[in-house]
Image (cartoon, rainbow, N blue to C red; front, side, top):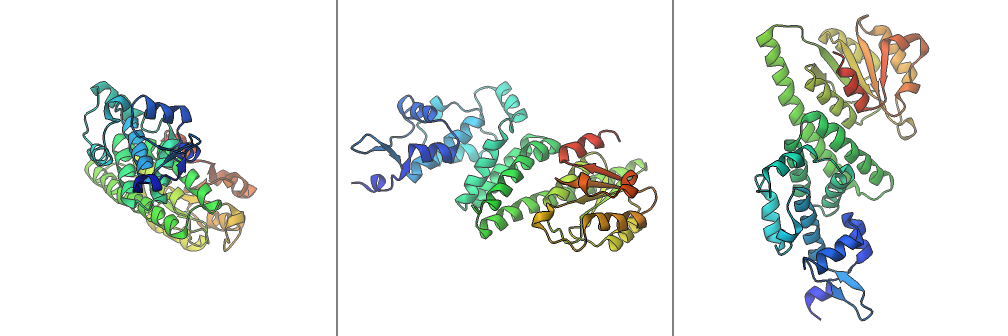
Length: 325
């Protein structure tokens, strides 16, 4: 038996589950387009090698960019990789490319699966490449709301189920945080430069989380959405006690403070959310609002400060609210 045959360990079911495709699609690519030739056991059961699974994965990515399976099914792995690495790869039709750019997240679950599959293979370069390509195709709000939000949901599910090692979890977190921070500082500088040129009124917000909550992805995305609407954002990082945060807001003359809130069951906060919010609200400038985000944000606000707090249960709700400015 050849080395290739010995390496054939993936069943039809496992390949379809791994790549997110139907068995009928897999069969068509084999029989109609001869994309791969799986090994067959005596009982006619098909088995696939890791190389064949990789080629199928590359074919899926190329198809999502508008390339025809009929045209590229004969490409080997190296040729498919070269095709995908070129951001200017020619598509069958120029109009199709424009449509593809608008619909890059038409299937968010597929995008998340590609990222997490690459992460599972420890292919961090592919993770970065997928994210960078997607960002270049769409505007910032679309990337955040239709791309990263479903990705974070899938990522958190994998973490909760214990399907991601600590190393993989930290690797993806580092890539995403670095990407968003780079964009944050670049765009925030643009807002500042525009303000200096126009000498208008600069709207400002401070961004942080409750004391003891160290999750930053939500507030980073909120910060980027605010920048996209022309706010200058002071990103203060995670976990700041109420009084130091209020003092910072005074010093920075912020119009609002954005706070991310955790799933309390999974966090050990220094103080309860209602106590934190009451202390913060009592020490903020009278004109400064609190914009609260998170799954349970609406349940945290004491009645006596409700008029000062806007609870945005999702980033999409925050983005909708920002349109009013």
